[in-house]
Image 1 (cartoon, rainbow, N blue to C red):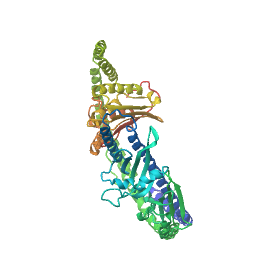
Image 2 (image 1 turned 45 degrees about the vertical axis):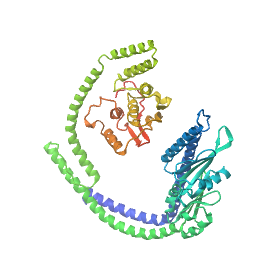
Image 3 (image 1 turned 90 degrees about the vertical axis):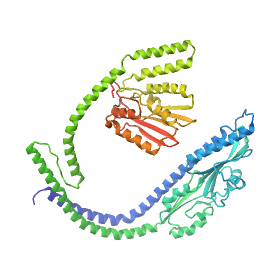
Length: 584
């Protein structure tokens, strides 16, 4: 037999198919049942741990919510007031609390409603249709007074709304709030209702399995969450009939997990399904092995033919190219990815020759224009610096210290921007430039914007491209707070992550609509491919372009934004060990 690729591949396929069929049949029959049972246990344990983790995360978030709610109640109420009109002060405080409760409820999707039931004032609530008598005599308030150690009220119906006798299923967090000046005096009861679906959804993965069951019970063995809602609040003994329907008995899988709030998560699974699956899989596996062996033999012959035919066409084209001495495009019709890649790469090299010639000429022109722009920017910069210094001196003599400070900040910013846009600077210098910019903005807008800096000391010693953080902060001032009247916050974070410097600027402004955000991201993705001059302006597009020029495609701006919640812009740059001669 002639030694060709086709013949060699055909023989290899036949040997491999025969060997694989023998190994698979013996191995599959021997291990199938054992693996089926172990995999079922592994899957249910994985799902149980995932559900437990999600429940723990939920209760951790609930703790955060109640801390925020308590903070709202204690930030003004417990402090002495000089208000001459106590009734007006109480009304204003009541309105502020309700507004902050509404904002808190909107921030967390799993909150149903929030109620503040004070001892000496009006009820604050996020629910307009409230039956005051029912909620004051309800199970949540009663538990708050009788059992202060357990703030969680098991699932019950929200039956204290006007015109709604049943109400949706919820579970509540109740807490007595004390006066900070008299810890024995109760100010009132804080009640936060959470959606029952948040518990149910975290167990859906397990309960969707016909052979499994998961439910939550409280410390008194009453059901908190169960697939059948009518069983909620009843004793766990009622689950026995439901277990029998799923063939769950004493020898079935059973695990019990303690939840952070004292509740219990119990998971059951019947092994009968594993046995049935094994019997079904055994019949299927034997049939598949026979069909696989027959089909694989036919495939081996056809596959070898589909590979060798395009290779012969490709070889003929290469020989013709060698004879003619001309670089011609190749066309190889093949469904195999490797041969398609070979065709694309060869044809791509031919196209790149013309592209490289054109790019070289274009790069030469861009370099000349950049040098001209640098020369224009350097025309007598000291004149303006001297003018700033003269204005600052006059302001000091006139004892106008605000003008003196602003002029000093402006002069420092001007000297900084004379830095070559292609160089790197220490992060501490870039932060100082941002602080000078903020000083000027405070002169314009007052202290309506709060700036927080979270900067590692180690990060301050690293270098980044000049003028990369201030344009992002300026973007927050111009666009993030254009319609926001108060509560404006900007957080600047610079940290070290292994061999990278992470920089982020986050605001709580108006955010960006989804369509507009996609448009901005598309512009940043385009980068310098649009042919525009990126030496003009210090906008986000310019910053993104210079980051990629200095550090490659990975160093790009990442934008996260949600309407009405704010925007976060961040980037990462690689730490360079040798800074001498660094030039972007």
